[in-house]
Amino acid sequence: MSGLINPISLANPTSVRLADASPVPSGGGNAFKEMFENALGTVSGAQADADTAVEDVLSGKSQDIHQAMIATQNADLTFQEFMAVKNKLTSAYSTIMGMQL
Image 1 (cartoon, rainbow, N blue to C red):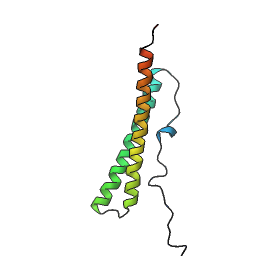
Image 2: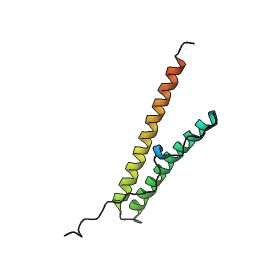
Image 3: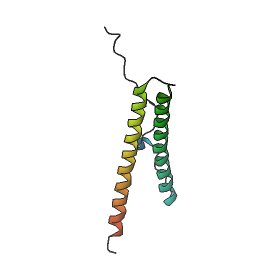
């Protein structure tokens, strides 16, 4: 009976989450730009992985629908995390711009 249950494996265990993205480089405005581009690249990469996994299932190249669903959820969570950070930055910017000097 112990051979009936297979362990769950991640779709892409080497994928990078936004929180694990490269450390914040020091150096002014270019540092923020680089950090933002890295985060956007991570979101884009997760979406591309999900698209590929779904296309493979739909075309019959792969029978592993679980991997496609996990990749899709990973892309969704990565995008949600990116949007949460963007919303916090927008809110902080608005607060700073509203301050009296």
